[in-house]
Structures are given as structure tokens and as C-alpha cells.
Figure 1: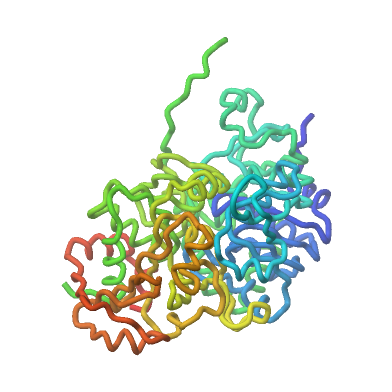
Figure 2: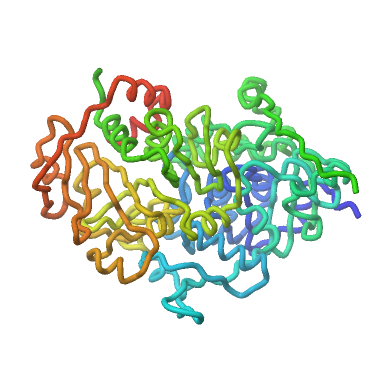
Length: 300
Length: 255
């Protein structure tokens, strides 16, 4: 059965005030369009979980959507500080729960597998264990030493962006896959956005490329250019100048507010946003094709 | 050729890498140093990024560790779970290459917070992958400008483990990796002694060891055979400047 719906409808139905949201995508495929829709719809009191909050959560925190952040690297990747989040943390206006990358991803993997916790080897960095009681230690029941355990994370809703999906939510996803699969399987509801909606035959022509199956997907939305200023491998480039510009802009709360007014509140949807970026930016982000070799699955 | 202190630091960091190394590349200057090494003396270098890219050969310098240029032409791309579990935790990474806001006497690193954790004076980005990389890579290199505030006797927060309070403490924990092997600064090179204490083992040309002491927050040991590092070659400088033409990294590194 088709799960196709508009992004506006999907956010309205499946993201609720107070939810724990995991807008997935490690640097790649970050679903900015969905975040902007959440901001426009005035969602409140959210717990935002992500390994790297990136600009997507800087913008949502600036817009007043969040009560709490769960994260492992709160920076503007390759650029420096995540200024809005940092300022809110320093002022005590945002709750947070902090992990390292692997310990946070292990939490998602446990959530995806439906087990209460998962172990990892000790790292000797005791301070994070001291400030976050979710880190626990267990003696290795089968031998020497101890393991660190962290509890499963099961967000209320994951938002996943992919290159292409069918109407049931089976999706092909390539390039940096980060924590996309774990986030989808760990979450209670999944909103899938895709650059292209394709027929089930396209998906079935390359089943190894199906990272997430429709079994766990709640809603499917056709949202081209959803990831800008992040990127979609093979479709458009990462807008690095925007990441650098945000570093300057976000040091001034008035400029952040003006940016949200101009680029989120005054823009009804992603199509309008992409048009508003203009032909120069669109041309700058265009990528030349670099095809993979086809693979032969055989006829049996 | 004229060169800046941060260019010298980056070149010396790049020279620590060997051709067969599998290096887990950190953001910022480490990214620049690893890409420089691969384009000069270590073309066989396998660069791994925490985003899950294995064997990257980017055509341009990636601004972030998740840039699309890392993917095109890479050996493999796996999930974050796999890169940390199967590659790093399992023991397939020979070098971790990172920065850090503070590095202390025993090579412990702070990338989390200055001041009290719950009421931060300066909130830094946090661990990212640093906690696991410092624990599980065979050896680690750090690169940071040599300033007193960056080299306290003890870090405000230990984001990742060096030798804790001395080499035996790390050994007792049984971590799989060997810990910090060198810290490259814009003044010279620090390496751990038998007890894991960072010791000045080399200075850059025209740097007086007393200047390194002035910029270090503990009584700095100086190796008996203090070496002088080699200045950058014209080729190294040329490639470095091609990699970072607008100075995004080099201008922000205290050079």
C-alpha cells in the first residue's frame, strides 16, 4: 500500500510535541527540509538526538523547538563551533546528554536490534562515564576484564533522506550511510524523504542497495533537494560556503532570526526554497556523473 | 621559500605517517596533514574517516570528514557502527590523528569543556570519535599550536585517554592501543618518555627550548638528544597550499 504523502502532512501527523526525534544522516543526506517543516509547524519540547547536531539542530534549537539534545559531537563539521547550541548550553537554556560517536551509535544499534543494551570495550576516558550515568560497567561474564554498556535508544520518530524510494518506503541509499539504517530500525515511526520516487522494479533490480526496507517506514515523501546545505551523493554537492557563512551568521542571534524568517518561515516548501537559492547556487552545486560498474545478479 | 608556523607544524605532522599506515583521520589540521602525506611520501596510506569511508582518495581537500569527494573512488564505505566496531575496536587501525583543545603532561586530551562540565565556561564540540580512537588505534598523533592554555598540567576534562597519570595506569586498563606517540606543535615535537610523560624531543629551526617551556603548563622535560626538525620543502609547501588555497585550516591554527 502506498505510503506517499506530502512532507507537510507527514510532519503534522508523525512528529508530536515532546517527541524524541532522530533526523539521521552523518554529514550526508541530512533532512533539512523536514527540519524546516518542523520549525514552520511550531513543534515544541522535542528531544533532538544525532551524533553530530550539525546546522540542522542549530536551526531547530534557535527556532525554539528543542528541550534537550542527545549528541556526540556538537560542532559545525570542519568549520568550528555550533554557535547557537553552544551558547544555549553555556547559558543553561538547553538540557543535554553526551556520548562519544561509537557509544551513541551502539545505543542505536541496540535499539534497532530490540535488546536493552549493548557492550563496547573500555576506553579509559572516565570523565564522560562520570558525567553521564547511562554509561555503566559490567564484568565480562566469559573472561577477564570489564565492558562498558550503554542503553538502547529508541526514538519516537526517525527522519531519513535517501536517493530513491518506492511508494512503500523501500529505499536505495548510497555514499556515506552513517547511522541511517540503525536510526530507522531503532525508531517507532520513520518518515522517509527521497530525491526520487521510483517503481518497485527499480528497487528489485538491485536489492543489495536497499538499506532500509518499507517494513519499518511509516510515510514516504518526494522531496528533491531535501538535504541542502548538506548533500545527496550523485545528485548535488555539499554547500561548503554555506557552512562557512553559517559560522559568521550564527554568532549574532538577530541575524539567525532574520535568516529563519527569510529562509524557513517565509518559504512554504522545498521547491520554493530551491528556486529561491537561485541559478548561480544551483549551478555551483551541480555534480558531474561518475557511474559505478553494473553488477550481474543472474536470472534463476 | 617562506613558510608560516602552522605550515611547518602540518608538514612535520604529515612526515610521521608511513606508507602502510591505516590512519583514522580527524577534522581540521589532521585532515590536511594526512592528505599531504598521501600526496607526498606516503601514497599507499589508507585514510579512514569516522563517517565510514575506507581508503579515501579525494580530488579536493574535504572541508568535513563527511565530504562527497571522500566517497567517489574510495575502497569501501560502511556504516558508522562498522567503522568503529569492525575496523577500530577490532584492531585494524594503526594510527589515530587528531587535534584537541587541551593536552596534558601525560597526553590525555580535552575536547569537551573548559571549566566545570555542568556550567561550562567554554563549551567545546565534544568527543566525536576521539574517545575510541585514542583508546584503540595502535598509536596516536596529536597536532596543536603550542600555547600555555592548551598545555595544562592536567586537563579540565579528559575526553580521551593518554597515559592517564603515567604509563602503568594505561597498561593496567588493558586498552588495545598504545596511546600517544607524538604531539606536533608549531614549536617542535613532544614524545612520551618511559613513564608516558610528554617530553620535548625536537624543536623547529630557530626555536629555543626555553620558548617551549614558557608555553607549557608543567615543568617540561627536554630530551638529552634534542633534535631539530627539517623545514618544509618547496614541494611540500606547494602541495599544502594547493590543498588549502583559501587558508581555511592554516589561518585558524595559530600560525
